[in-house]
Length: 411
Ligand SMILES: Cc1cc2nc3c(=O)[nH]c(=O)nc-3n(C[C@H](O)[C@H](O)[C@H](O)COP(=O)(O)O)c2cc1C
Image (cartoon, rainbow, N blue to C red; front, side, top):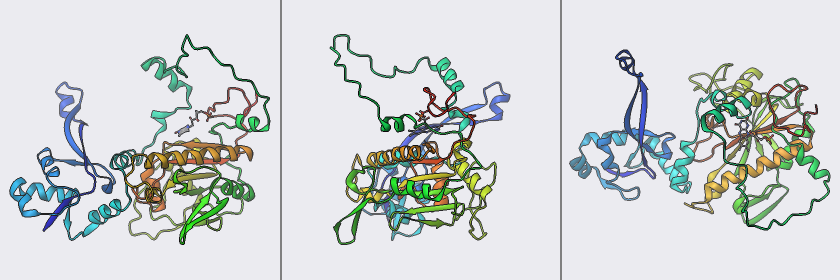
């Protein structure tokens, strides 16, 4: 049998803390740390622990050329070779099995290795966040101030010797009024639905094609209202529609071609209230979800941020990486460009929703792995980078919003 290493395997020396009752009973803190090696191999979805004794074997063979297993057995022992094969870090020829298919799929994407490692390692699964990250909560700022002192000033202090060039103040116009009323909405009216025309117009404005180019037969590019690195627009919009007039609540994929919604039947168990993550479907048949199940999924998607899960429409922005990497193969900037593309789309959505009289939000605190499962994505092929949303605001302010000029919430 011949073997080679998977496309990317980056080693991390990690201190793993575990709780041990013995330690607590013998007067310790109960928290015991041990040192371990973890391999970040993006085709595996998550980092896997590697026995320290097996680490040299990973460095003894490359990711391109196949070498005879017998020589590795002789040098490192069959146990080490078996362990790394079982972990999916070494792959056999012929390429068979789930790990080999995943490695081949990953190779075909054209990822820059450090970007792939960072992307895969940054994905969350079943994280129920607000306890640790209530960034809209002023109390948490007080805690931060106590713990860390002041943050860096809001801008770099000006040079004391620079002669300032004052810029003219230009009279405000309607566009300023629009810009000034954009505020992250954390108070949705849970009884209100978005009118179909408003919903359709918003999707057309943010994600729709305003024109098309055809550089070659079968190669089509869209013109959108946001810019896109390489003009390729790799980002697709998946939707959790909870309340839009005339549209059945459910999961959808926005189709640029034809400006339409494609229903998505999730191949995972219907989420239940209180779930922090998703579960496999098991033997049950996939089916559309009830409104309650959809709300439970929305909450999982935004890592437990109930104020966002209440939005009538949540948009999952997920690039198909190879659409960009086709042009920028193994390129140090390509993943960054995908991230920036998503930020541009999100900002256009924030403004279009505001113009429509709706409250918008965007959050990066999302359970990517759970979202991928629901929409049938593979993390290194297509993956959510943010979730945005919009809908009518509630009549009363309960969760805090940043509206210092009281333009959104008049006194
Ligand atoms: C990339 C990004 C991620 C964000 N993630 C969260 C989040 O996880 N939770 C949240 O409550 N707000 C989130 N926000 C919103 C910010 O908290 C908000 O923009 C900030 O408080 C300023 O308020 P404003 O948007 O009303 O100006 C995010 C904003 C951006 C741009």
